[in-house]
Length: 295
Ligand SMILES: Nc1ncnc2c1ncn2[C@@H]1O[C@H](COP(=O)(O)OP(=O)(O)OP(=O)(O)O)[C@@H](O)[C@H]1O
Image (cartoon, rainbow, N blue to C red):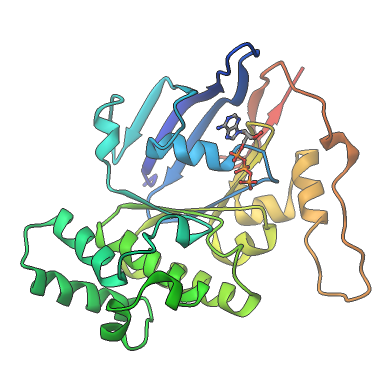
């Protein structure tokens, strides 16, 4: 039986409107399909539109952004703009400090999320929060509840963000570059945590990254974005072993292979400039593998 999607968006467009400047097309009519219970990686270099697409899903776009889509379906229900603002979707960001209030304790943040979710006493909410900290691998959780964000390490703060995200019982977790600010060992620990939680909680996850190396070990499928468009998507093996689009091939060449003599591969000059006006269409390579063709 074909697995259904947790999220389907048809023809998503985001434009930025600035006074006295031409409108900028940032997301150029993409179709997003996120299968239920999988980790989907969205890759692409800086500026390709990964974060803006995720903010469009979360209703977090700035005021000067114009959002359009033909259809927005979550958990098999087609939704209008108003309904889509209260979905069980949580997002974690690259820098947890932007989402944590420096003047409030960790406990304050977590208890607030629990109490927003269901009516409980402070004591009960505290118990739920401590249990969640345990689940995400925070040692001495009771002590952490009384500490302030700046008293914790970057890795710990990201675990707190994950705990907060899970406390609101999401069906879909969007992790936008969740490990970019962390050192390599902590990065691996956080990625393992996300993978384990995804399995245990049967979550669907979108993992946004500019690092193809990370998606290889984590994701069942991959979406490649370039200049506001999806240029290729497929199962991880299809993308790694049978890439079709020149940009995907360039990204694959840019993965470091651990050889200390290698020079950092820099992306082909085709990437610079060259705005793409004609939309093109996605051509099917297999049931799960599609590539953008133009002209
Ligand atoms: N508030 C804004 N006003 C105008 N343009 C914006 C705004 N925010 C983002 N952009 C533009 O939208 C494009 C896509 O940005 P986005 O943040 O989605 O890229 P990204 O792929 O997530 O890159 P990164 O990995 O650096 O976050 C960029 O060209 C960026 O300059």
